[in-house]
View 1 (cartoon, helix red, strand yellow):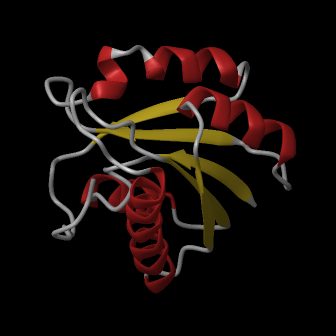
View 2: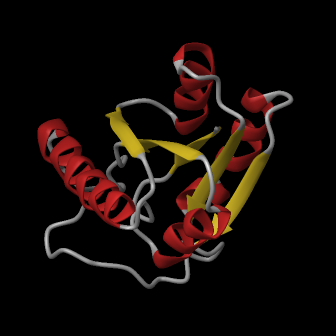
Length: 145
């Protein structure tokens, strides 16, 4: 069985990610880590609201993966994505075989602007990291932070 750790936030239910997972087929287990959004400058956004939005996105994504026959579980974290990867690599069973990071395109991605992908690769050590860029296609909900 291949254990994939997926790190995604706003793109957790993007078509690009779902298609990449479906294309792998076979004996696969997916654990999704969905970090809570950091509010943009100048906005007052309460922690419980941000966490609830991340949980709704994650629940929707896990439902779609399970409907597609992909065994999946996941959790929301209030940590930097690279720290969440380090924690996942240290605690998840079976051990993680590969990491998929899903982001918005470069012009829209705060993670790419802040060097999160490079920090995840550093945290991953010898575990392969694949970067998926969302095509912007995926279910949307009106109240996503």
